[in-house]
Length: 398
Ligand code: PMP
Image 1: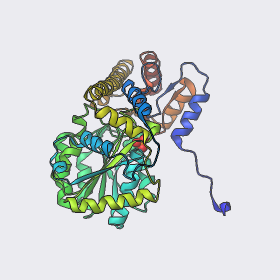
Image 2: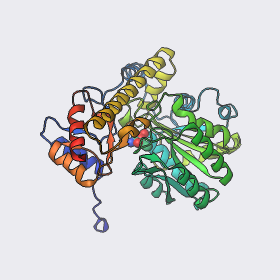
Image 3: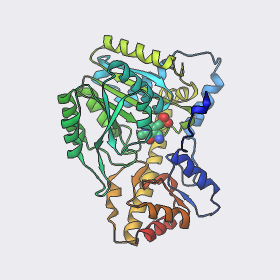
Image 4: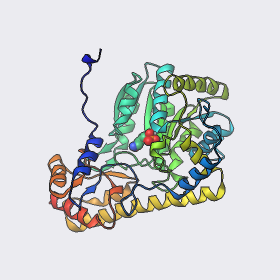
């Protein structure tokens, strides 16, 4: 049976991590991985997360199965974090949320839900987007297409082309994948006005947004980063949000996320949830418990919640400091490229305008690692290595 199977190529990011680990240069810098690292280069567990985990584990009395929807208290807390406590769609009971194994799990359920609701629906993805979006939706046999989003040459969003493509080519019932904030890979986010304009088009064309929210708290603040989701949930009949606690709770391997679906009324929502539970049951059955228990322990206690918010802000500030310093240093060290665009972008990632030869030279001559697209992750920079990294990048650009 297995003779038929082809050997698939390695995941490019995992290959990059492997090459980085084998590099003996003490000056090496990893600008590839999308995991927050602190000033010492360590991917930390937040103090509030460690404390909540300790409390939860010390009080845990059983490891029996939970329901397929996961922990209902977590679902309630996460829904409030995403949509805000007083959101009219929550009050009208038009939103239902279930726990998922990360946002990857949430997106998987979203893909299968779309396939069950409207198998002819096409999913529109930003050009470029997180590579795994394609794989997840392909696994549900959903046709995909790209809408223009980020112009690599100009380093800005091409909003007009994005709207034109969706207006001219998308069909009623198609889904549009959007990044809630901190667009991966470009770091270029829609402005509040652009969210409002896009919402008007989505309404006019009868499209269904699927919003992937993997970095809430890393652009401006936990509240501001939810603007697009909250605005769309207020003005649209239908919406899917897949959210992740991997980054803002540093829970990566605990696989903690959610899917929320907004529909026209609470009766429709019951049908949707029954479908989501059936999809989950046939796949992973129930989501892992630890991460969700940690998140709810934090969010249900006012003092822990505030302490966690402060920790998210510390991560955000550090990424911003590295972004600002890199932009300033690159500007000082060379004149060919205007790097001020980096200051308008948010979160872990941005593109550097580097070609394949320059990216290879950075890796082979300077032990600086980044993915082939030129996307860099600011988490790999520290005050100790930023001068070295900026010198090397400026040298290959000149
Ligand atoms: N969406 C985007 C845009 C991401 O960058 C990531 C993480 N790299 C994910 C989803 C997956 O997150 P999770 O760990 O919650 O599955």
